Length: 260
Ligand code: PGA
Image (cartoon, rainbow, N blue to C red; front, side):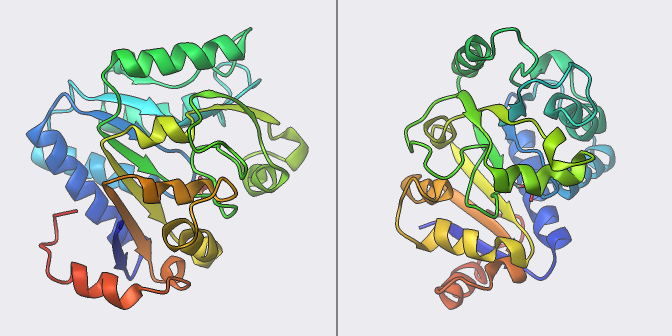
């Protein structure tokens, strides 16, 4: 069962995740960290940068792999995940850009770029700690409903609901790319520790389906139930549809604040 930690605010949940990840990097400076994009993890990255500045956390040997990237945006497009990761992670934390990896969505052959990305992750020894968000439709990474739970990094078509959700970053939905390169569900499940963040009422049904519903490709997030070490950090609205909330609260009220 996933460790489910419910905080009153996204800020509190993000700070808790940041404290844990900082402690993990301090104990293991050559950590391979998987990062998600989107609105959900933004505060976590800011908090991690704050901890780094305050405590002088050494991030010089940290390696980072992003979950996914749009296909077809020109290199340097501000909404490409390469740029989002550069702004929110690489620059914010002062990382060595050569240690930060994002699938090459502007490659002439995105299929080959997806294969190459998977090989690059393998060569790095895989991801130790993977930060995840979840889509309102239950996707993790850009693995849309129906994705094989054993899938590897590949080119996928984005669902209309995902493009609509991400239209806020573009002028209109038709400008949101229709394809992406995403780590597969199987790739994500290979990470050592999965840290899922979800905030807001719009995520409540997806969170409940992922953590407590049947394991099904219709809800790719439900594959988290197949992983031995998942921590879900939620705010109250995102936890609202969980059936076993009382149990989670009892289990976690006994743990120190910086342990996940
Ligand atoms: P969000 O996206 O963090 O912007 O809500 C999460 C996701 O779609 O995986």
